[in-house]
Length: 208
Image 1 (cartoon, rainbow, N blue to C red):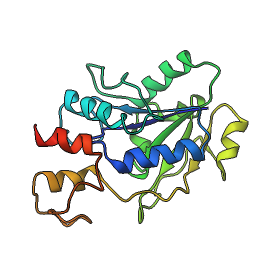
Image 2 (cartoon, rainbow, N blue to C red):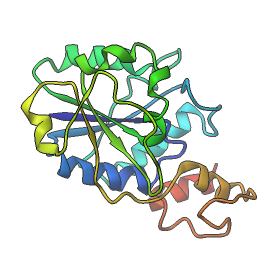
Image 3 (cartoon, rainbow, N blue to C red):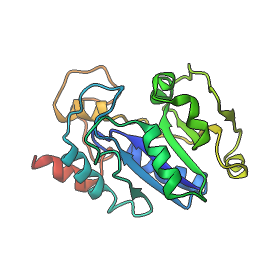
Image 4 (cartoon, rainbow, N blue to C red):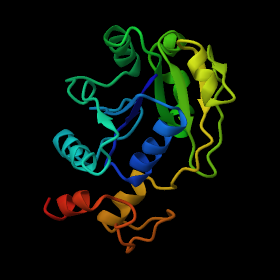
């Protein structure tokens, strides 16, 4: 079983990286790929360019070698649709069960995603939630799995709400610190980035 962790990674941070690392162990995945999108359909314009986000991901994976990088979406010249990626992945890995990993914020918008009614034919869905986030979306054509072990018993069609203790870090909070924005977020604008981002990325951002 392999996993694909989609997102804008604007920028990538420990909340993505450490949670992905832990999920790979929890779900017993043979591989887990971070899959950055080029132009997210359901979010505002991104702060960092395609080139910058990709460079930061490549730097981050030096410190997280157990994770991989899938560039199919960020290399597209059009908007990123998860169903297009799932169809490609199913052709490339016909013998593998695929877990698509998304955050609760994305899951709560799932009904608006392109061709969401056929997602269950291509993958299991793994949903991550930061503290305080609530599920306000029905699970559609998926069946609920109560444990990671259930995901290995069928090829696709299950949804698992991860019980992982997630780091409560968001890219928007980090951007608030970087650009000294006034915010009501959880992270003070003057806080050090040392516990939020890999050192390689902090150094990268300092020379932009």
